[in-house]
Image 1 (cartoon, rainbow, N blue to C red):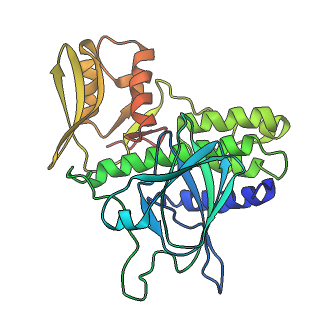
Image 2 (cartoon, rainbow, N blue to C red):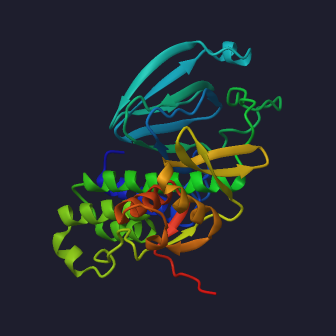
Length: 316
């Protein structure tokens, strides 16, 4: 579990999954062992993220590869009654491995302000009904909040995918063994502006000579006035409104609305164009704003997965 070569192989396979835009919740496997059905997966944990209390009813093995986690366990009888008082807390720094061999209700949590990475080996029987047809204890009852609409959910998945790429870059950056440069190039090719910047910085520190020979990583990908911006998700209905002396770009759906950008009131003309147009050049954002402010507006929307930049502009 502490081998750079092993972890690099895991990342290579999982990046292939991410390249297919597979950002399902939980632990989607990057590999299933033939004939045995053992699933292998990486867990990406955002700051303060947890899994909520849930049961594993067959063996699993977990190891922390980067940063740290803490794991809470619960009394199974209490959990069956819908109560989840914490029974134990286990700290799990980098290099710590643990396993489950009997039915266990637990909840991994990232207690830090940075992303954590874990690797999981999961029995093919985990999550299946027992002899009485009873399924494992699941998550705590969901809230009554409306489900996030598909277009906004797709934006959230796009943002999380970039965060996962960046965590992979952090892990690659501390490896002492293994051929990491090809994977850095793959992440660069699939990254947004911020991810590409981090990939280039990492390559400059670890692979200076190869960076200078890489046509891909030497591309200029920073947002400028010449950048082409396009809304990345169809079905986002947009409007602009004023509130408390500021202008807001709002996405509306059948369930309600969400403010996705709030700026000074004098930048309202730029938001109105963004609400109306599906694609445009960043320099064409109107209003009494500077080029730096135009770029900042585009960068904020791009970072959060709402728009893409530098795609070919479709002209009527």
